[in-house]
Image (cartoon, rainbow, N blue to C red; front, top):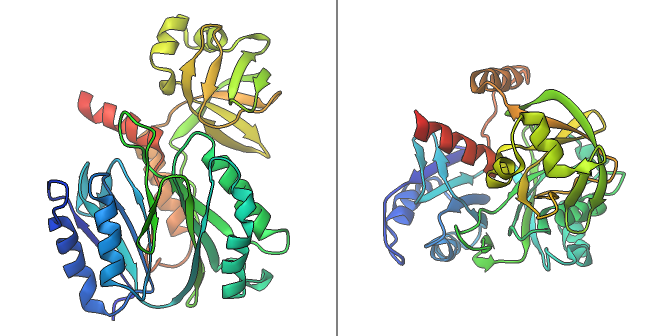
Length: 340
């Protein structure tokens, strides 16, 4: 029996049609009952797919999220369904954090319940992870990550990875799903223990520092707005670094991400809007007096080579893998492909 099967369908279909699900289910159903199914799909049929997975695999945990682009080894598509089914060699426990955009920490007990169900201890370091999908309202992601860190505590090392669900274009709506239930203001999660080996997370950074370092000197953390870099209006300062005018920066602010430097690591913050006072509101928090650096896209071939080298350095061949791509990568690569 195969341990893991990936399936993908990019059939174009109207709301309520199940061709893509039928394609995927045919591939997944001949290998027994999965321990866990992880899926992503476009928006129109997300709820339908979620319900069908739960109906067809009632004994399995099924976790999913809406996506702008469905990826697989067969290619990628703006519509359709992609799923990964794991049949053996793992134990898992799931749950939901409610009020993800307001106070998910109220539901830390739900994460602790899953941790207790698996009996996760410090001895599980390197073979346990938590996969989370979060509906992508403005403040959800950081609040949710803090909640999982609180649940983990200091005595357990649980690798955390996942994604905010993609938003339907022109709206703030996004979907996540767990065991047939669809949510719009929640984070769904699954703790996974690998019974046959280790679990490794590799971070790929497609952006590199430009060497232009500066400090955030006036910040409103609640609204994720930076008013000043190096005591100058934020957008004006950023414009001076790239040799442009403020209106140019404002027109396409997402093209100029900055990196917040903490503990020798760089965390990407992408601009969402420029205010009339030349402030910049970011998608993630840049804290007051944070050391920051202007970023630029790295050579994609070098990025790919580094990723392959990191995988080779593991010293073993993974049984399966799951890739999480950021929205900025998607937007950047989409623009690049349209120009070529």
